Length: 396
Image 1 (cartoon, rainbow, N blue to C red):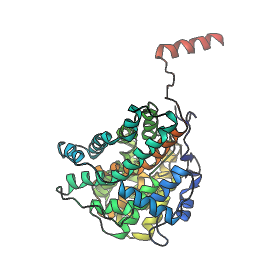
Image 2 (image 1 turned 90 degrees about the horizontal axis):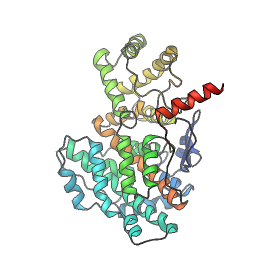
Image 3 (image 1 turned 180 degrees about the vertical axis):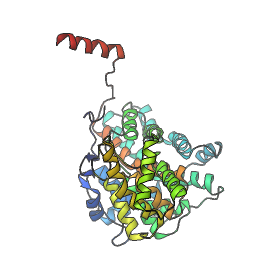
Image 4 (image 1 turned 90 degrees about the vertical axis):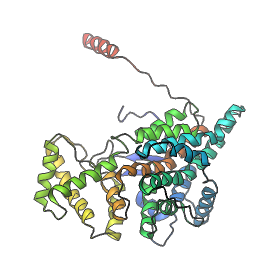
């Protein structure tokens, strides 16, 4: 179904040449017009959330008000943590995330309103409340999982004066202002990528059955956890570590070319390169590269990533099998996170999931506001396809 135009998705549009646009704004344009926490800093994720839901660029005061609103919604009932504590710590962080979201589902206002027979014209209001509540609670839920699995269960309370991205980093245990800036950037650029990707489309199709935002988002996160989707970011970092282990960080261009060819000839892919839609370098990669050039230009792993950017695309083009040889968003994020101390690659997809909530739930609000129907595409059997082909051949 790749490329088939089959759904309405208001919050973002992906262009093969230009990359993603959030409500018709490119990433560089968002970096220019959305409010920031520090002068010349990265956009506040709350600003992007406002943009995705309303279609308007918010003022600094509007973003501050939304930050305050999200903080007021952020408290998680204790039983949710009890549910998570019943899981083995060895459970993948994404398994724990979806379990936590499902436990939160008992808080759904949409579910209660539907039981009471609320009119369809009001569905969007309760979807909005659920969506903002869930978005507000995800950082603490995700931080609890991180601290439980990787930091001995010692928790860090949310701060009353920090914005959404900085508070998330703070609850994970990171106090470096540059890490807070990275989280603002990361959460902003990973938030939405049109509606056809696995996680976004899953949220849409489950939500079309009038499943509430908790159920719909949990389903989408199970899609994000797949190796061909959100799990790709941890695969990139693992591959880079394999490169370092075998040939080191200070490598020549020829050494790196040989290693890339060795990877390809073994039947493997170079993770972080190529995209189903994009035909140029992912602008989400570019803005992360700019962040690295600003904050960690001499980091050996960043320099290795930069060299891969020079080496990999020409080799992939030379194979003749790749339409898009350019790096995507996953090719860079792991190296940035590791530099500031977040080294647990298994956890990276949870960060992706927290960010993606802003896009898919903003669209879910609009699905209910527009009264979009349940999805029900037509399927066929292999026998039907064979019969159809035979009839066409006979007709020719």
